[in-house]
Every structure is written in C-alpha cells, then in structure tokens.
Image 1 (cartoon, each protein chain N blue to C red):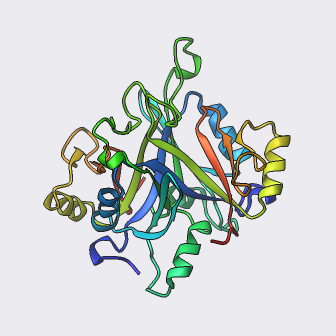
Image 2 (image 1 turned 180 degrees about the vertical axis):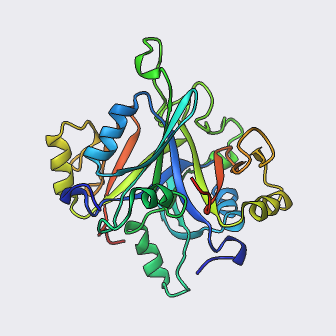
Length: 160
Length: 160
C-alpha cells in the first residue's frame, strides 16, 4: 500500500551511469544481459540510451516501448559524452567502489537459475568480480560491465 | 518480448548506494519520497536496507513484502558501513558527478504531477540541484538525497 496519497504513484524509474563507448555497453546490456534498447535521445555533446527488460509478449509497438520508459520501473540510462570512446587521454569512469569516488555500489539483475546464468556468462567471456564459488556468499555473483561497473547476479527465488 | 529465452525472466532488480547515516537516509526515502522499507539484513560490520514502492492495495504481508525484493524491479539498496554516521573523520561519499569519482549519475523517480511534487519538496526543505525553472529543461528537476546523491524527478506523463 502506498505510504501517502502524495507519493502513491511515484515510481523508481531509472538509474543513470556514464559509459565510455555506447556500442560496447549496449552490446553488453542487450546481448549479454538481455535488456532491450527502449529509446535514445541525442544532444549536441552527449547521447542518452534507455534500456530495460521488455517482459511483454511482443505486444508493445516501438512507440509504446519508447514511451514505457516514463511509466515503469527498472530502466537503465546510459549517458555517453561524445568522444570518450576514442580519446586516448580519457581515464575511464569510477565504479564507485574504490577511493576516491566511493559511493555508488552496483546494479543487480535477478535471474531464475543462477548456475545457468553464470555458466553462460563464463562462456561469453564476461569478467567476474566474484564467482559463485568465491567468498562466503555462495548464492550471489558479481560480473563487470565494460566500464568496470559491478553488476550483481542474484537468484530471483532466493528465500530469506 | 524478451530478447532471448535465456534472459527472458531476468529483471533489473536493484541499485545499491552507500549511505553515511541510515536513519537520515531511510527517513528521506520513506517520508520524502514515499518508498517502503521492504527488508533489512544486518551483518557484523554493515547493514543492508532494501526499499521500494509498494504499489499494492495493502494486500502484501510483511513477509511477502520482504520476499518481493527478489522478484520485482525498482528496488533501492542502501548499504550502511557501521560507524560512518558518528565518525568525525568520515569524508562522505561521492555522488559520482564530480572528478575524481565520476561515473554514476543519479537515480530517478517518476511522478504524476511534477509541479505538485516539487512544491512539496520545497515545503519539506529538500535541497535542489536543479529546480524546474533552472536551465533549459523545464520539465525535470534534481533534488539531493542526504549524502548528496542526485535524484532526478521526471513527469510520468512526459511525451516524447
């Protein structure tokens, strides 16, 4: 039940991270993680890409899909500042998990079968920050996206 | 429609940020932004808090609400490393929007009436990074959470 009438229709719509090279990042988030590119908006010096899982049965038109990004949760916004992808002096972005720059931690994807998901990531050559077998928490993994952001992989049927 | 069978049930479940003082942050995300505290997990040196909008009509039990965090999108995870809230030497976390540490940008909340939402934030004394009247984009605002993370406020009925 919503906490207050004033916030009843609020939604946690999206999370934005900056990426060095949108081609590489979009390939990762669509091909490896299975999101859809819902829409993109180009400005003079940067372009915004909006991604999200399309869980519909193929019923959404391209326009509805693009519009859906304002009326749902679970959207990832990638900001590409033009030129970083080919600038030899570009230092890369901070993952948020080291000093200086610590703050942001990760995004997380829930998956129905974490063993199968991690085996597929291994086959695809995705770098791991933490495999299922590492550390004490055997039921979660962390992979790295192309900019080094941590992506947690969590079983959707995990019991508390 | 899901892109591949292997990723069909994947969900963009949560985003994690570190917070200095959970009391202050939870008050902000629940009282000001209207999220529910769905569950928390205490470890020896840190505690995790999971928040999300409960859009049900009050039908979820506390247990179902806690369990829902593994099977939905739009969850915010706050990590509190014990002691930061009272450590005079703690420097605070990076918002991700300045160097060094640039990378993460913001989270975003969609709201049905952005004028009303922003007037309420003003009344509540929430600091703004960008008011509706600032800059060229008159239909979005940015407020700051207690750690200085940017929270974009976007109208859910924005037309492309």
